[in-house]
Image (cartoon, rainbow, N blue to C red; front, side, top):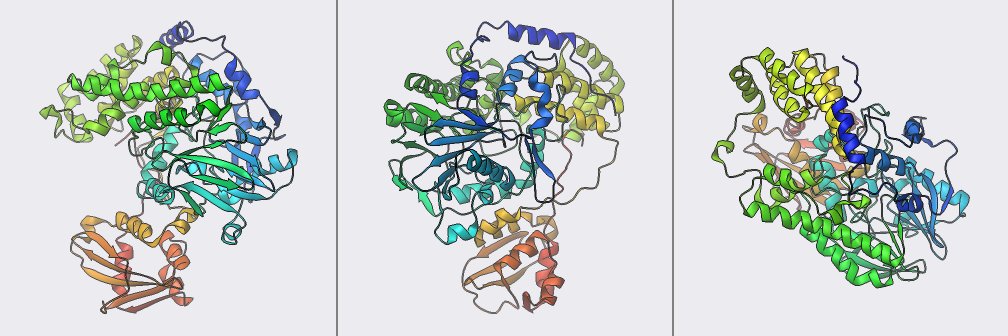
Length: 636
């Protein structure tokens, strides 16, 4: 393994140009004022552990960010954002609204009701959410949690719910849970069917595998990073279906705006008329967001995003004195809040309209992304900077949403797969050493994008070529140091780290498993969709069978039919005898599919009954893939 390197002089000059960029007002202190306003307290030791003592969140590892001046290895604008995201603790943002920031990637808010707390977006992990609640209880007062509001269907806004309430309290009617219509389906679709690949790529995007220092992970743009605790989900007791819906929760009036297909498939903003305060969920933040997130997710609708932000302005701006969100710090003042909403709206609208204008002139996706530049009036705002999303990959997202992967050039319609193409490229270019000689010359000139692109072919043609891996790593490292986007930086630097650490062997990897908290909240159909996705189609191509599944204690039944390499199901009462009938309670089915207990063990305990041809059921279980959590990305 080669050591990490310092920034080159070329990268240093790039940072000097950023500091001299006339569009950026480095003397503007409003973000610092807003990020610190209302501070009450923070953890004496900002380290959060689980019940076994394992650290799930640690702000002490970011002590290097105390330095006000950016080092050569970090873009100065990203350094500024990373330092702003260090303003952590409990903040009073209104007489009856409190936030805890810096306990996770997201922000949790607490509304003081007549008798208890209304919790908005309880973070990723139960441990971090519990720590936030404890901080509020200690410094604001002891009150029960009477309601939880999920603003949208991303895991950093519901995963920690069991840290502030329980399934039992919700089932007993002591705690309401409100969410936008379609919340559960959207949460499951994103975190289950593509869960393994998303988890792997999220480790790149958030830099979870990187050292925390000036040559490694400094921030995630949207917050510091992701916590690593217990993730759960409690289903909503009340779904908000229409804009204009109103609720009174513990004496607090709330007006809702439903915003589907914006930052999340199911999302909502809401206004507190008693407090003149508007929660914009994650439809606003102090950075340019993702239209396509690099961790993978369906492409978001920039047109809908801008539309609903415009609607929020129409509905609430003339009554709003405070805008707060589920990431970053609030904005105070009617004029400031209106400008913030307006320029964030216009950013997403510009990305949408300009991408399609250029595409209709015949520019390809990559050409659009290279040519796209935001107007100075938008780009000069710190809250529109590319700390999370970027103009480049967001323009590609708009193109992809409308026009797909194909750019119309038939030479690109059916290209060779990466390993085969790489071998031929390298051969055409005169062999690996000839490529590396030219690539080293390009590196010396600061042409790091080209070095990464061309040497990647050598790595895929000759993965054991250490010189190629190290040169590509050096190029990715400099690109990471230059990136204003935390997401881009973390991707580049994680790729560099894995290229340097790879020794020609794949390390043993445990199978990625769906969290028990998620699977518990899935309906039977969603659970069977996940099972069907795991079916190894080629291995199952010649297998045909039917299994009747009886979920004891619930009245649920399913008929599973395997044929033609696919698993179909019908949620209906079991009909004619299939020859195989499986009877078990839903919690036992969860354990079986999560592989926490084996079929033999469950049968021996009398918790599963298989009637008829048992081998049919065992064969199905053996045909389900277990996914490698650490599959290769930067090597074949």
